[in-house]
Length: 211
Image 1 (spheres, rainbow, N blue to C red):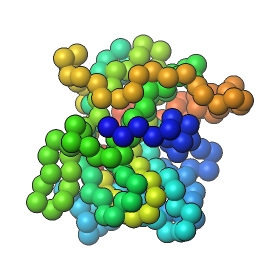
Image 2: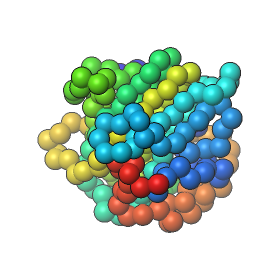
Image 3: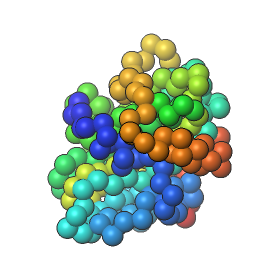
């Protein structure tokens, strides 16, 4: 699996104060270089999908996300699955999954290369089924997940699910890592705690059918 520099990866998917609402349960950072929203024409199932599309010359890295509290998942293994359809995503795009701990540690993966290890099936319409499995530590604060893309192009996601996995199912996320920034840790953790305190306890709108 392609491993991008961790600082770059982390900066694109951590919580940001300028997030805007996309649809019920879903947000993304304000950006002039990417468009994000619901697509009612390109869908895997139902009537809507989520799309990211580059819109500026400085399109480098972008993500849409949903946050949930970790209360119901601590000490358990979870599986994020969903269908993704990239269109000329120059530097890769796929689902991502992040688990944040109360002290700033995290578990993260974005499988941007859609490698064979993570691609478990592709349908006739070009949709690829992606799977991410992670262990949720006992001190987890919250879980974030969504769709991410690097560079120019467009990508869609649809029919996501978050389920409990068995202990026998291997994880394919990176190991737990410490908070990396040289300064501002206390303020960043405070902001993270506030955002997760407002998050739902379970995922919502995983098929993007609610506006």
